[in-house]
Length: 461
Image 1 (cartoon, helix red, strand yellow):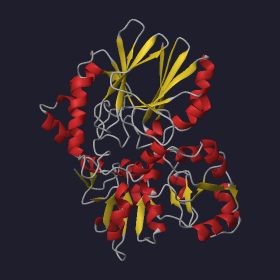
Image 2 (cartoon, rainbow, N blue to C red; image 1 turned 90 degrees about the vertical axis):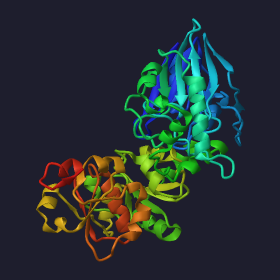
Image 3 (tube, rainbow, N blue to C red; image 1 turned 120 degrees about the horizontal axis):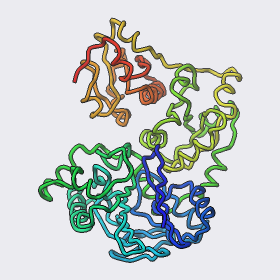
Image 4 (cartoon, rainbow, N blue to C red; image 1 turned 30 degrees about the vertical axis):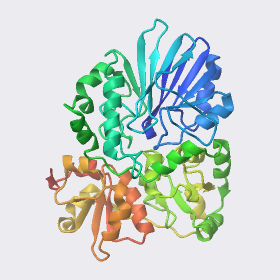
């Protein structure tokens, strides 16, 4: 028997590849399935099951393409219904896999069809739990994503989650290894550890949600402090339920080279959005007016899904040469299937064509510290509330990037302000969005709070 965790850092997502005696199961695969197919071929095993722990909201799964490629069936939890061929399991169902068994534990709460998969080894020992979004390390799945008006409230779902954990998970042996679907950085929880596997016994000791004195206390603790889910979550759920384009088709369409003139025509003709994926250190020096900067080297796909409200939006990519396919692939993981092409030759092609360029006014932390205006001008900290509460520039306003489409409408046109984040990645995203909306009365601070702390700027806590 072999268990491989295939972890994708930019999504904080774990898929699992399990083999035993010539047979394999894959749990929660990503949309780009080539890696799984290569493992199957490498090991000379037959894929027997593709198991989804629930209808994912934060990424588009690869279950459909993987099933087409291998012939393996797609399995969901009890009550799941899809627009394509799949099977709904039942609570307690045993799935034989070579010399081991996979036992389905129905654990509603995060969603109604959520399951955990208990691995029982060759000797009948309960060995591992693939806990999906039911149990994370340090947290549990958020119970506000599957609400149905007039049927289930988030309090109802939190109560279901408590029952699932207490009745199905807590009675399991302490030495069982927990393999969750997500880790720190995922929007599916609020308090996740950076580690990607742990013993159940340790989680019983330290996980705040597993140590509440009552069901009522659990519901209150789990719901406290939940931020609004990213905009793309509902669209991703529907793609996972109803199906999506084959990834090869998405790549073929997205890797169409555009000349600068063709980019201009697409923006003017079909309102295409230019997504510039270069580093913020390069973007601010010169970019296509109206383009949005979300750097590929960061939390790229989740931020795209959070800030670009419509996954059907036509996109044109500006990328460093050779990274175009990576960009299109990572966008597809969160449901953006309408990339229509990329700027051939990158930003240099735009410059060489003599096209108009824009810049962001960026200053160093030292310039910020020496600036007399910074003592009176508004400072906007676009980190999240937790980061802000730890340390912030004295009198700065906390306005998280995820909410920019709301708070930027309240900005005063005639009053200058400064913006910063932790290191410059998020503040450059914000700067590009603000300028695309015609807001230019600001200065962005290079290096963010990480660099500002090294100056004499007064801090608040």
